[in-house]
Figure 1 (cartoon, rainbow, N blue to C red):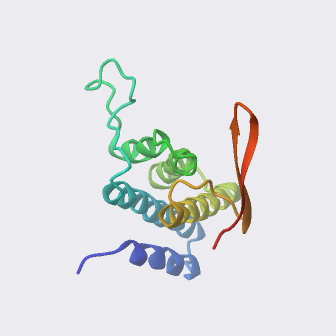
Figure 2: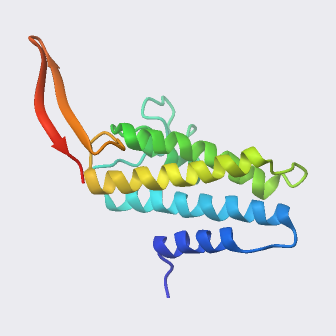
Length: 167
């Protein structure tokens, strides 16, 4: 049976609630599982949204074969190079989360600090919240406000489109 993104997020929540005798291993596991849930959610978004482009290297690269992104960078940088501010922020955050995941996986000689745990939690929530928002609202700018006024600046000044209630 295939694993879904929902399964991964549930697994991450269950790992958060587990009690481990070795607290350091538990912290690392929480960071790793959270990162992969987020990474795979972002990858699924890129695979299913035809308006988003995959970027194997920087769009202005002079030598695309030499300047190829790694598999994880490809996901993050595709979001960074999207023309959507919300997804750009997700891509930047995913790069930071990836660095923290590598520390958790490979830098066993380094302690996982309380700041690392807090950052991982914040990255996890930030990315999921914004990907969910993008899926629901498309190109709208992310806001936690329930009411927004759409405004555009033209050559005659600011034009407003009125009050809009977000659901």
